[in-house]
Amino acid sequence: MTVSELQSLAQDRIMEADILFVNGRFAASMYLAGYAMECALKARICTALAWSDFRTTGYYAKPMKTHDFVFLLGFTGIESIISGPTHLTDWSVVTQWNPDLRYEPASSVTAQRAQDMLDSAKRLIAVL
Image (cartoon, rainbow, N blue to C red; front, side, top):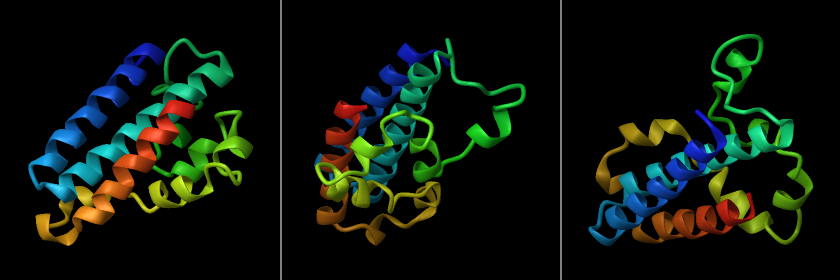
């Protein structure tokens, strides 16, 4: 995927997460907000490393096919900004995400937890 495709996907998933949140689908909303964050991190990696697209083949494919936000952040070139004092609270919220949320029952995520994830992901995506 190209940088612009990843950025567009991140924005689409955040909009979809908002729709799910408004309709009381908190677990799904939180999952999609995290997925949007992952796409934004991967887009930023492409920019930082001057890649035309996100590497899904070749030498970098295996380590980059991760969902680990802390690992991905290390390749963005702005780790100190995102995990620094200005964004630390938001970063702490989004790093609680994991892809296994897609298997959680709808009742497992509260409205507040989903709202926190959405808000934090939106703020961090804007910085990325």
